[in-house]
Length: 234
Length: 107
Image (cartoon, rainbow over all chains, first blue to last red; front, top):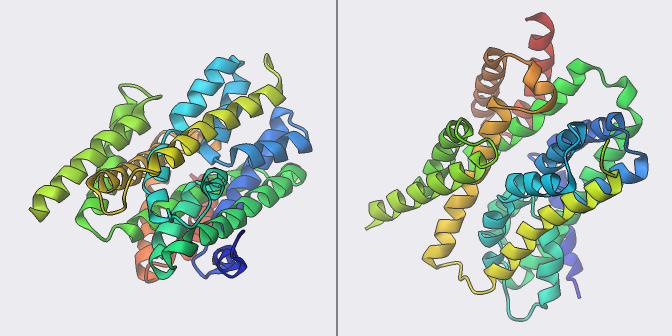
């Protein structure tokens, strides 16, 4: 089944000195409070985090509910904003594929793909034997998923104590944490350029199409960075 | 609210899982040394950077009430803390929350 040693090694990565636990937990505290203010009960709030486990998607759902959007509109809006999970999966799973591991582990654990877990795995996979990487990944995913659920729970019950200043502080934590992680991960020309071009083009494309801006910024920025990197190598 | 919360949660999770499972299924035929893997790696980093930039520049929710200048100051100062703390991820993150709460209160 699952190699416990590597599963717990992955799980404990959340306790590392530079772990995303604080940023992730704080963001889901904000989500828990937001969902309660929208009229969700505790079960709905917890299930929302358990089943979606993607912060921008949850925010888009909350905004869509507020403006009375239809289910189809919610589906499309969330799909657009979470489409980044597709290239994230494709750039991670080949690192973990091993013929001795059953397929169900990969299909099951794809639910854990989110920025925090993905960046931890990308930073650490080289130190894990390839066969055991999927169990390590399931450990990381379970840990970050647990933090998100606990954060939602805390946010829901403490929402009345969270004033606007605290909510603003909680809202900035996540983008700053991920920004630092992305800058820290920029160790090659291709990755550095991808981060730089994505950060510049994403907001520029927002003026053309807010829905498509993330995808367009990612595709144009990432492809340009890839081609420049390949030209540089050759 | 016009639609049921439960249906909204199910639709949101389905829309999110779709990208994840399609990514996992596509990965079966991609080798980590291939060019397409490198390309997707660049796409993933660029898409994430685009998302983070959009979250800071065109935020939804409470951050949209904060001026561009304050958001920019918080980002620049947090990056400064990141570099002087020898690229520690936790210090600039915690700093950003206090800095944002403080600046939004006084300006």
